[in-house]
Length: 178
Image 1 (cartoon, one colour):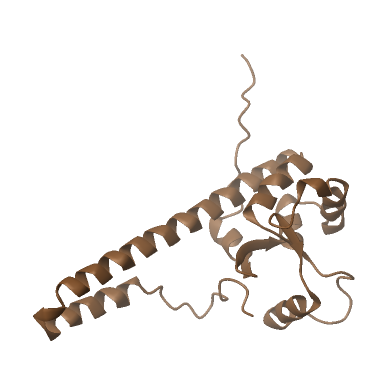
Image 2 (cartoon, helix red, strand yellow):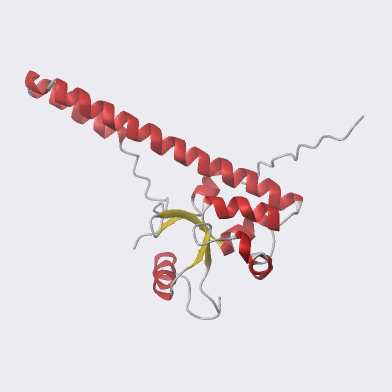
């Protein structure tokens, strides 16, 4: 019986775990090298060396290095100690850069993690598109029925409240806050 070419995707990494590692920096959704190396189960230095050996595969829209100010902001946000730690500011990888990493890191663990990461980015993108379409439709309905008074306005306000994400005090904010 021939071997299957499909690489089984493990479930020990959840989409929520990956979503917590996606930040918004410079208007782009990115993941940091240290988070990616943890998911790929390689050292951060090894990941960055592999990238440097193949730097021509990573243009600026695939990967960029954080400025000291951006890194300091992250450190303050996470409460990271200033003692020890990194010598250099982290690399930030966009979705395209993460996809390119699969050609640089060719282990089965890295490929499995990469599949999950790309699926998570796709899920986030689909959610944002759906949310924007729904918001546009509500705005159109509101304009169409604005003559019908306060009753319909209160219905639209209730719908908008339902669209707001629930406030979870235990979850850290999504994205990079500049």
